[in-house]
Image (cartoon, rainbow, N blue to C red):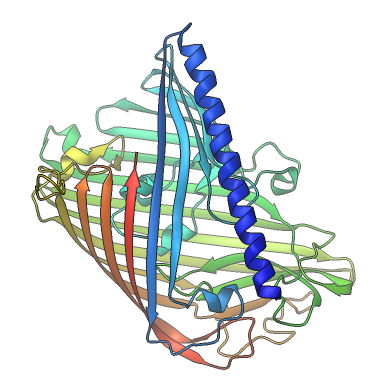
Length: 473
């Protein structure tokens, strides 16, 4: 009965999210159409639907009681379902509002921004947008080479509220610099305007040299600052309620949407006197990090090689009013990936590169069920890895998994080192419709276990087979 009620609540929640998103979009389109009659304006409906199927193999786990273990279950998933509008006003003002109908976050806004674009060398953006960081992240979700990005993307700033200046000062060179906050409320920024700073600089040497059939991309990104997160007690109703609050400050999920907690670092907060599920601490945790990323890509005709290396240092602390002590953790992380993508049907990568990032390829021959055609076919191979300085544990944590000088309730769990090899096959029927098939094999440096359960099963390898059908418009 409890699980049935939870499913019913989730269904109602998703329905409400979709209804609100559609009403907001329709209202925005109606207002924009009315305005377009009086001012020079363009309005476009945009969105994407990515529907996935996952089969997780080789780990032998069959105990699915919470979100960690459930990530190992075979499942269907709406990876993305977004609907929005974008357009221009008086040619020099661009805007976008994109709403998200998936997930459990009560904030349905995926992106929403206003851009001032009169001068290509000096443009401004205000709102919630993807931060200028890394080649993978700046490639839109609709056009990434594999179904999921590499481990390095799990460290990045992604989409935040803030403001940015960006542009292309000379042929082949782009830059971007932003100030942002980590969440939607004042707790995330710690009372400051922003607090997180991101910058990116790229150079396409091939474009600079006039080699129109090639891409030689070099880039560097940096992300620095302090954010705040409120620790809370566990929401896992499958275990006994606790008075220990924790904040997850670093988490790696295996690629291709595999195990949700391949590695996890949790900083302890206040020790509460009463036990309950999902109760927030009285004091927020402070998280400071410095993240750098190096980018390289070379493409000639239908073949592309792409690689990035990132390095992050992080320090986090939280005050426990119960023990009158401060918990703290420090760590560093490295990630790297190497990938090859080959367009079997001959589409050129140079045609899909613009403003310091790759966009989607356009098939030479679109496929239509009634008329035939080939579409565009792609083969991909990627090696991706992460390594963290704090070693994890091989057995489930008790009360002092990792002693930190405070209340000794912070914890570091599972494998601090792992790598994944992914094989990919993509079929683009047309520029807006694709089928994707990925096979990802992950090897862990130490045995990992299913967190937050009584299962003692450990495994050192994970295999995931996934398929996606997607449309983008």
